[in-house]
Each structure stands twice: as C-alpha cells, then as structure tokens.
Image (cartoon, rainbow, N blue to C red; front, side, top):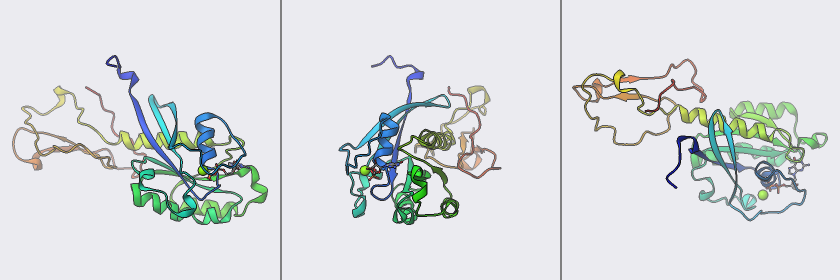
Length: 245
Ligand code: GDP
Ligand code: MG
C-alpha cells in the first residue's frame, strides 16, 4: 500500500468513443482492451468501460475506454458518460453515410460536455471500402474542417487501432505536460521569496502555462513569469523541461 515508488505512478486517462450506432464503437473498445473481435452485433456489452495499461514516452498510462450502452440512436447519452473525458474518438462507418454526416454534431456534443479535448476522426470498417458511402476526398475534407487527425481503421482487421490510441494518449500527455508546476530548483529562485497567497487555486490545464515565482516585495504584478516559446500554438507545444524536486 505504502511501498509505491515513483515508477509505479500511473496516469489515468478517460477516453470516450462517440458516433452513431453500429459504427463499431464497442468492437473498437473490445479489440483494443481485450484483443478480440466478434461479428455478433450486441447493442450493449454491459459494462461502463474496459481498460488497458500502456507505456508511452516513459509514462505508465491506464486508459479507460468508456462504452455507451447502445443508447446513441436516442440521443440520450448521459452526462456521466462524458464527464472527465480527456480524449475522444469520433467514429463513423465506411458503409453508413448517416454516421459520416453525423460527425460534426458528435464533435459539438463532446465539446459541449467536456470542452476542447484531444480528438481523432476514425473511419472504421475500411475492410469494406468497396461499399463506401463517401469519397476519400469527403473524408479528408471533414478531418480538415474539424481540425482533427484522421485514422482509416478496421477493427475487424485490427488495422490502425493501436496507432489511434497511441496518438490520442501521446497528444493528451503533451497537453498535460504543458501545465507546468512550480518546479524551479531552490538555488535558481529569486532571493528571499515570500509566500504567494494569490495562488491558492490548483493550476488548471492551460495551453499557455505560466510559472509564477514569488518575489521579495510587491504584489503579483512584480512576480516574474516564465512562458514557453510561442512559436507553435498547437496543442502539442512541449513545455520547457522541468525537474521534479
Ligand atoms: P457500436 O454500436 O458502435 O458499438 O457498434 P458495434 O461495435 O456493436 O459493431 C457493429 C457491427 O459492426 C458489429 O457486427 C461488428 O462486428 C461490426 N464491425 C465493427 N467493426 C468492424 C470493422 O472494422 N469491419 C467490419 N466489416 N465490421 C465491423
Ligand atoms: Mg455499442
């Protein structure tokens, strides 16, 4: 219980998979977490989520993929489903035009519930590409318009599913690493620091992190700030390297 070392620290990540019914969401979760595929169509798999542990960029991650209980056709996915979601898959099926057309509204739904989290667009069932109900150009246009990375995938053939979640998790970790805690070594801090009682709130995830260092006199205005370079405004901006004390 108390013998945890730093190496045992795991990052829990909640992922949500949205999209119309029958696009392959439950199958995707089962494929990724259990390594199985069944062509039997079950409306619910009767669980809230499946999980899988993975190591990525020296982080141990516990990825929990939440499944909807087949209620998506009724537009009745509960808030609990989305709550705390950190990554999202927007999935449609190659053989289902409606599921493709519904993608923008699924994205809006996710954003309404959990904000601008890391997302990817998944065209599932590319093993059935001969029966495609949309063109390659339409799909690329959609990804571009929604500003999300596109994965053409087949849960059935186990094609691109590993890559999908690897991308989502590492993108998430990059945004998370961007939230910089106060980790400047003692000897590099300004002399005679005073307690900064303006920062009682825990730091919030932020794409523009700031390290506020307390200084000897004056209010928050005289605190100096370190900001990462702003050359790249995308989410994948890496925070400056920090040392954990
Ligand atoms: P959900 O309603 O979105 O959860 O969809 P399911 O995971 O239940 O899948 C619906 C149906 O599509 C099932 O019969 C699956 O076996 C099938 N399916 C899922 N992924 C694929 C795929 O990549 N290719 C093919 N051909 N069928 C798939
Ligand atoms: Mg399902």
